[in-house]
Structures are given as structure tokens and as C-alpha cells.
Amino acid sequence: MAPVEKFTADSADRVLMGAGMLIRRIRTQAQGITGLTLAQESIVARLMDAPDGMSSAELARAEGVRAQTMSTAVASLDKAGIVLGEPDPTDGRRTILRVTDEGRRILTDSRSVKLQWIRDVIDGFTPEERATLDAGMVLLDRIANS
Image 1 (cartoon, rainbow, N blue to C red):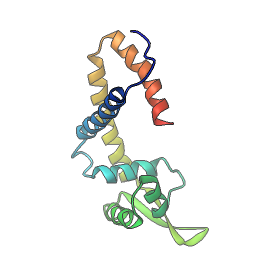
Image 2 (cartoon, rainbow, N blue to C red):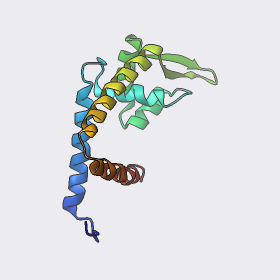
Image 3 (cartoon, rainbow, N blue to C red):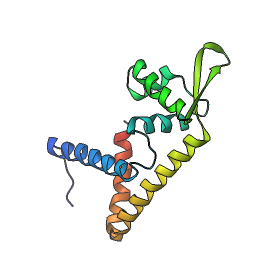
């Protein structure tokens, strides 16, 4: 394959469309398993990555939504026993949200289904295609972290 001097708008569009289609396809694999909306699943995943918990305002900023929208989502997750709010020991005005054991189980089950689907698809690739995919992941990580 010849080196590409300039990445065209069409190529950038292919990356954008391909990434979006892949994310939607992965998400549909576990649809119905968690009983959560995609937004709720994203909130639970973000809280699992925050060992000290997060406030609703911090979650709203991280998820790019309004505080009122986050409060509504958190309330339904709290009611379902998936997240738990506890008073912040250093600031009584704040509530720190954490994932419950049930929330961890739900997200772990969902992730397992998604990972198995990915493994099943990649198992159908040739060794050369798997190597190409592996090399491309380094570049996709660079894009995602830029």
C-alpha cells in the first residue's frame, strides 16, 4: 500500500462513519441485557472508572449534558439500586455517587456480551487482517486521545 501524503475529507468521513457504525453495532449487541438506556450505561461506566465517586455536577460535565438532565438520570439509577448517593464527608452540600454491586454486575454482563461479539467477528479475520486491525488500533487510540 502506497503512503498517503494527505488525508482527504472523504477519508476523514470514512473514519467518522466507520467509528460511529461500529459503536452503534457494539451497543446493540447488549441491548436489553442491562435494562439501561445507552446514556444510563455511560453514566454507570464513568462512575466505575471513578473509585472515589463523582458528584452529579461532575458527571454532567463529563457526559456533556445539563445538570438537570443528569439529575433525572441519576435519580432513576438510584431508584433501581444501580448507583448510590452518599454525603460528601468534606462538603455536606454535595452528594458523591458510586456504583452499587448490582450496577457493577449489570455493566460487567453487558461488557462481556460486547467483547464476545467482537471476538467472534475478529475470529473470522485472516491473520493478516488481524495484524492490520491491531496496527490500526494504535492510530485510532491516537485520534481518540488527541
